[in-house]
Length: 228
Image (cartoon, rainbow, N blue to C red):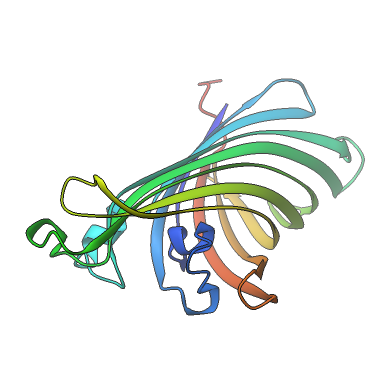
C-alpha cells in the first residue's frame, strides 16, 4: 500500500469542466491540492482512490481571482494493469481505467452574501477515463509518459439570491477530453518524488476550435505504508 500527496498548478478546475464559459485559454492558473491512496491487488494490478480540491489554496490567495470558490471537491477511483515489463528490463507498459466525480459551489465575487443580486452557480460532473502509460526505469529513477481520454458529463445551475433558490438557467453538457502527460520520478528514503507536466485538450463547442490547458504538478509518494 502506498500514499501520495502533492500540489498542482493549472487553470481553475471549474473552468476546465464548465461548458457554459469554455474560456479554456483564458482560465486562471492557481494551485490545487491532491492526495491518492494505492493498493496492490495482484503482482501486476493496482487499485487507487484520489481526491482533490481547489478551495483550500484559493483561500490563501485572498478569495478573489475571477470568481469566489466557496466549496469544491473531486474524487476518482481507478485500476491499473501492467501489460509487460515487470520482470524484463527497464521498459514497462500499463493500461488504466477509472471513474471521477466533481462538485462545486461558486460565486463571482466575495460580496455575494451581502448582495442578493449577484450570480452564483452549483456545479456537478462525473465521467469515465482510460489510457496507456509507458515507463522507462533506470537506477532509482524513471521517466514516464502516456495519454488518457476522459468522457465527462456535467450540469450547472446558475442562481441568484443568497438562498441559492432563484434559478436563472441550467446548462448540461458531455465532452471527451484528451490528457497527454510526461513525468519523472526519483526514489529516496522510502519516498518517491514525482514531477509531471500534462495538458488537457478538448473542443470548444461555441467556436469549434480545439483548445488546451497546461498543468504542472509535484507529488511525494510514500512507497510503503504497510510497515513491512
